Structure formats: C-alpha cells, structure tokens
Length: 275
Image (tube, rainbow, N blue to C red; front, side, top):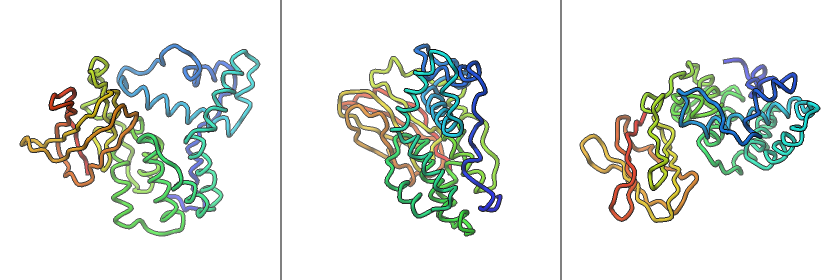
C-alpha cells in the first residue's frame, strides 16, 4: 500500500466531462425519465448502478463545477440534481472523505459515526473509512478484527459493494473481484411479479445481508441450511426500503432464504455466505 502521506481517498475520483455531449453520456440517465441503458450482464443491479452514477456526478461537480454550465436547457436539471444530492449521504460521505484527506481524523470519525447508512454501499464505506483512519492512516498494521471487517467487502463485486470494495482490497493488498456472483450474473430472477417484491443483496453475503421488499404485512424471514434446518429467523416490518440481517454467525456455505406471511411462502432464493 502507498504510504498514508501519499495515498488519499480522493484518488478514486473520476475526471469531469469536458463538454455537454460527454456530460449527457455520463449522467444523462440521472435527469431523463427513460430507463437507464445498462449491460445485460448487470440486469437487476439498476439501483446500485444508479446510486454509483449519482456518486460519480456529485464528486465530479465538487471537483469541477463547470459541468453544471454547458450552455443548454439541461443545465437547470443538473443544478437541481446537485442541490438535491447535497442533502443526501452521498454528500456527507464525500465530506468525510475530504476531511480524511486533510488528516483531521477526529472530525472525520465524528461525522462518520453520526451518519446512518441507507444501503450496502454506504455501509461498506463507513466500515472501510473507519478502518482506514484507525490503522493505515496512522501507520498502524491492521489487526485481526479490522481484517475481518474488510474481508466480506473485498469479496464483493464493486457494482454490489460500491467504491469501498476498492478501498478494502487496497488495504488488504488483494485483487478486486471482477466477477459478479454466478447466482446473479446474466440471469437474476425477476421478482417484479412476486407479491412481496423482495430483493436481497449482496449475494454472496458476508456479515450483513440487506433485504428490500414492498408488502404491507408482517413478514417472517427464514434462512435454512442444506439439511433444511432453520439457522436464522427474523420478523420483518411492513414495507422496507432496506432492512439488514446480521449473518455474521453463519458459517460459509449455501443456504435457502425464504420470506413468509402467515406461514405461506411468498419468496425463496439461494443465498451464499462467504468468509
């Protein structure tokens, strides 16, 4: 790893577009009503890709605000998008990154711990930034607990785990996983016809699994092992954008995850736990 005095989190920032055409290519989907065109291999990861695009847009504007002034009627839409993002965790995490790069780790940690993550990408960033500030940044070797926190993130594909995947791999000195999970790539089950509208991610999962569903009823989540034994049960509330499930105690392996209402199964899928 580069020495902390030469390594900065901001090194991952992507250069800003040079003109309106490039801006449209990179960020047009963020202001258009039309669905974002993505590689078919990434079908099912539209939300993650959309979030990553917003991160990239916000970071680009922070680096060079001229992107907002291309002399077209879309300038207002992009400016409004930037203002809206200023109120989100994307802006808060970008601020923390900037404070980390200024080496004010006390303030950065204070702001980081006050932030409530809303998805797996933000969750991963909080972990990776905290580990960085408490180890690499102060010339301290990672301890076993910190390695254990970074390992699950490092196994994720960046589309699933976000920018923190690169940070975790850098701190662990390992290659980035460029293969989407085989259970998902190119053939993610379409749950839009499922009455619960359930989605789980990441899959494979490490210590934390996130579940998204839209069902105005009290649900029960069960995870069973290959013998059919229920190893984890959790009651779910009504309609959740993101609800977390702690899978840290589950050994690596293949499982089945189900969601039930009054004993009736409305969703089932395979789940892989990695260590």
